[in-house]
Length: 235
Image 1: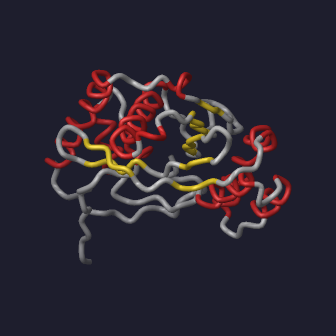
Image 2: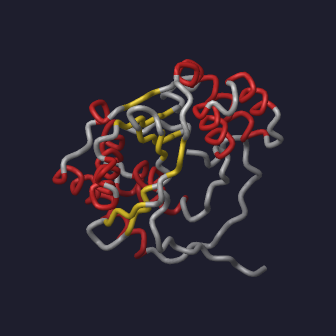
C-alpha cells in the first residue's frame, strides 16, 4: 500500500481560523496547525448567505428559515437553522440595506507571513457599518476577539482608512461552553476592545513560535479516519 504523507502549510489559514488558534499553550497551536492541513468543508456558507439576504431585505426571516430547512446536506441544514434561530431578534430589527463584501486585505505578521483579512462585509446603512460573521461552534475568547479587532483596524488603516470611522458589527453565534443552543453575540469597536500594537505583537509571539516548531516536524503519514459524525472537525 502506498503511503501518503501530510503537506505542511505554507500559508496561514483563514483570518478567523488563525486567530482562533492562538492560545497560551504552544503545543495546542501546533496541533491546530496540523489539523488545518485538512481543510474543513464550507458548511457555514448557506447560513452566511441566508443571514446576509435577510439583512438586505431580499428575503423575509420566515422564508430564510424555509430555505434553511430545505437544504439537502444535513450538517449545512443544522448549522443554518441553529444560526438563524439564534439571530432572529437581531435580523428582525435591522432596516434593509445592501451588503457587500470588502476586497481582501493583507496583514503582515512579523516573520513575513501574510494574513488574508477576509471575509469582511460592508453594510450600506446610514451611517455605514462593517460586519464580521463568526459562526463556528467554539466561541472566541476575549483575547482573540480583541486581537481580531486590532487586525481589522490595522488592515483598514493601510488599505482603506476612509472606513475607520465606520462602526463594527462583529457577529458571533457559537455554542457557549456547556450550552445546548447557540448564543447570539454582537460586538462593536468599544466592546471588542482592539489590542494595542504592543499587545498585538505579544498575541502573535506565541503563534509564531509554534509555527516554527510546526515546520520543524517531519511529514506525517496520513491515516484513514473513521467516517465523520455531524460537526466533526468543525470549529
